[in-house]
Image 1: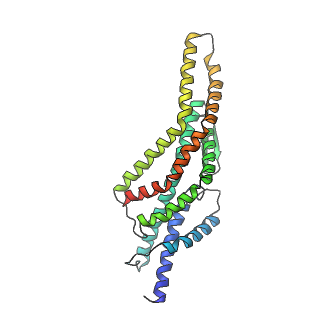
Image 2 (image 1 turned 180 degrees about the horizontal axis):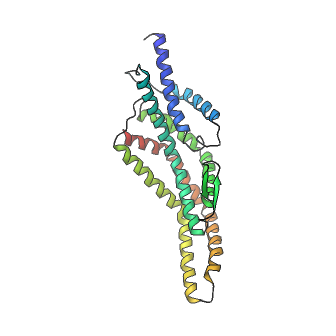
Image 3 (image 1 turned 90 degrees about the vertical axis):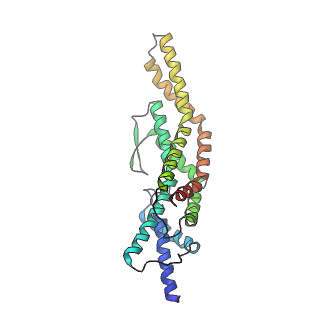
Length: 259
């Protein structure tokens, strides 16, 4: 293979690596934030693809010579990057789900605020836990773990070698199940405490019927819920730390299901 042919193969490989990195940057936490300008995303994607490119081996069969088959390969790589970004962002979904459960129990379920990152309305506790989780994501180097998962994905799904199979469904279902489990773990301290508070108020309503339990109950549940939320913050940090440490494993597990 001459110099010109080698240069063409290297350019094609770089473009495919850039497609996977760009797909990840569209959905991954922090990287895919709406507050990050598109020019910045494109620049960082190109730089990261340039760093990752020497670690990627081109397929022995080469690349298609026609534009349409090569465009299909680019689309596959974008899909792989999008899957990596989605897997990395599922812990944020778990955090917001836990916040919504807490808001319903406390009584903040009807109070919504605008999330400038996702450009949609979320509940108060969901937004608070979301911002805290994003901060912890950076503190515990979760973005490094996502980048490591991106590089390791080439060992599981080689470049231009991604295919959709029935095994993908099992990996996605397992990921959704893990997301729900993490959400209930985060929300468990507050929801269980408020359940006990409801039981106590029910007993008081039966034993002291002169007491207006509705007037007493709402501020009491808000106070108990917020206090429990503060006390349970170390548990929240511990759960997220374990989730961040397993991000690379989750990414590779989903792709293992694909193959």
